[in-house]
Amino acid sequence: MNESTLAVLGGSPIISRPFAPFVSVGDEEAEAAAAVIRGGVLSAYIGARGEGFMGGPQVRALEAKAERYFGVRHAIAVNSWTSGLIAAVGALGIEPGDEVITTPWTMAATATAILHFNGIPVFCDIDPVTFNIDPAKVEALVTPRTRAIIAVDIFGQSADMRALRAIADRHGLKLVSDTAQAPGALYHGKPAGTLADIGGYSFNYHKHIHCGEGGILVTDDDRLAQRMRLLRNHAEAVIDAESPAELCNMLGFNFRMGEIEAAIAAIQLDKLQARVQSRQRAADRLRAGLQGLEGLGLPDVAEGNTHVYYVFGLTLDPLTIGVDRATLVEALRAEGVTGLGIGYQNLHLLPLFRHRIAYGTAGFPWTSPHTSRDVTYGAGLCPVAERLHHETFVSFSVCHAELGDDDVDLVVAAFRKVWAGRHLLGNRHRRAA
Image (tube, rainbow, N blue to C red; front, side, top):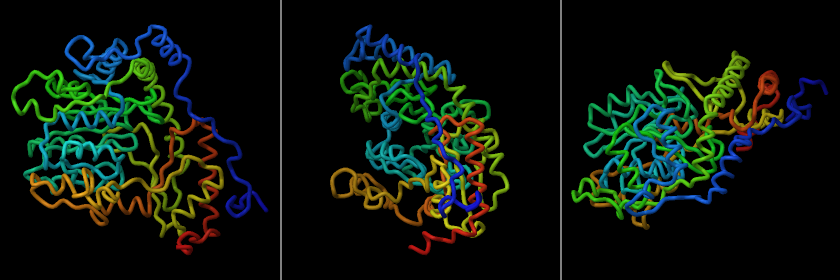
């Protein structure tokens, strides 16, 4: 069998060795964690009035560093980005039955944060090139009950914040930026995540900044910052306000980051720029190597954006290629390409949303008397996102390994080998279906 024989058909794979895994922590993080342990203060939070309400020295130092790094007035550390999203939505003061427009092409917490305050998620379709929420489709979804838009900077580049801000301003809406996957990206020269009323970043496993679990909220709004700090740490026990507007949603949580995580995250923040540049170099080389492959769409970086490549998002045109997606990805994996994924989650197709079952079994909050219309979910709601998920989207994780030039070149060679021999594959999975 010659060297051009596809591995899935019995040939030798292009990539015969595993790539070095990406290791996000080193001696600096180990020493920072050890110093916290030696100091004996693993958390200094107290859920009551006083000095301990704002957390310990490591948490405060991380927040001050993040404020400088991202150029914002306030940074609020939390124990996860899910917690950050819940705090952000709660701080907006939404009422039961209020609607929040967001994308289905994201992790579930983006939408379930809305449900935590008995709000109603309204899903908007996405741009087929950037995969971010499509501003052209947002405005048609605004109703008298709409209170906010949550944009998601999916895969590593900012959503179109100028267009979304214009819509929000026209309708008196708040704008939230879920920048979990894009710390370090820029939007017209400003850090992604800082263009909204509230933004923030995830620090959990496989993100650009990794401290175990954690996240950080950013805002220039003093009132929203204070409300998020209250929600982070048992708001009901310390809030002094008497007005309903200020007491709204002040059922506090324990979203407090520990001192070890804060110390590690502060070290990781110092490494963010170099880490992003490394992934951009790998992505640029990958893009250059894959240019010209028939039926393969490469990631597009929108005008004014930089991309930090949490995911290198590809699209396939199965009719042009002549092979279905599953067959093609099977062949690439057989050549040794790791980090490939098929499709992406569409929240409006999850059982919880299709059946509208969240609190109890009677459809609350959708069936609440506070809701003003019947918001439903299911197939056909977001056709662009659905087609990408079911037929055309393939992800390649740039974060899963430490990809040097030689590694990228092997990935490119594997793609080109599969493309050259794809006529021998047929639509194996389509026939099986």
